[in-house]
Length: 444
Image (cartoon, rainbow, N blue to C red; front, side):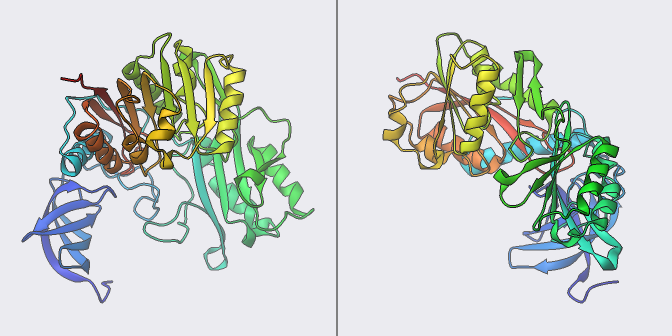
């Protein structure tokens, strides 16, 4: 059935993908965005939104398919908003992300890396060890829905499985729906957060009202039956507490290459893809090349994912992070791993760094930066000649802000962009993570 605001009859050749995974084409100078279309395809589409400079359309028919097109593995693809690119071959996804990175670097800041690094990629399925699932009581749809939101919607998708979650977590979606439907507070549990560690899997139930004495045995039975630990969270992340079983193994991940173990709470930030994280740390350390006797800064250090491997290589490291909880967790991990002699952690708002406050930290030989999506502009603006490190490794989760910051480093602060490449942390999504190396140019 065609909606009244849909205009049929358009034919387009798709040239590329945008950062939401939509196909991009042009007709008479006007940019069009078509969800589900792939580069190289000739398609027909129906316009759903039209503006002076662009259109958004709905894929109608594929007249010429791309050789990159493949059959999505998940039956919920296209409805669930968790994935955007399951219809695209995984190698082609990585190549498209590399092109997005290169395009952003050039179009935003006119910067080209001297070398493009080989992409980092790994398992395409079952990789997502951290996830936040929505839960909603919908009587008209048979009870409680548990899953990701529908694409471009606030509604929870009707789901029975998820192929990017580990298989044992995917298998819990239907049992979770059945459990929540039995609880007295089924309409007061909006979220289930998933955290998979090496020795335990944790489900955090967000509860807007306390569970009742009648609910408690149902939750315990579920945890025992499926071999998970259930936590309850009444308000903010700091209120999350273990409920059952209380003697479960510690939630943690490790980096065996550096003889490191990281305990963490299920609501704390860790990388969703532990296999890729291990390779990413290895590459970051290779690019940074920490040496005994060097003083290195790890800005936006989180729980010390990069800090502790740098210290293990013999350097002295200062880790700085805006979250007090993560700073405390980083200190605990450093102590557990016998590295307190080589690391220091401080809480700081790195989005308000100034030249004076940066200088007060003393000189660093090298930096590692791993900022959130907003990037590290204020930190980079604060660099002066007396505080400029000779090498910066920049780990990014947003190619646009990396490109903006790269322009500042290269065109204002006197650095070369030596290398850059993508990290496929989130297969089947349009999310682009990347890593780049900058080196200070010698004064003429």
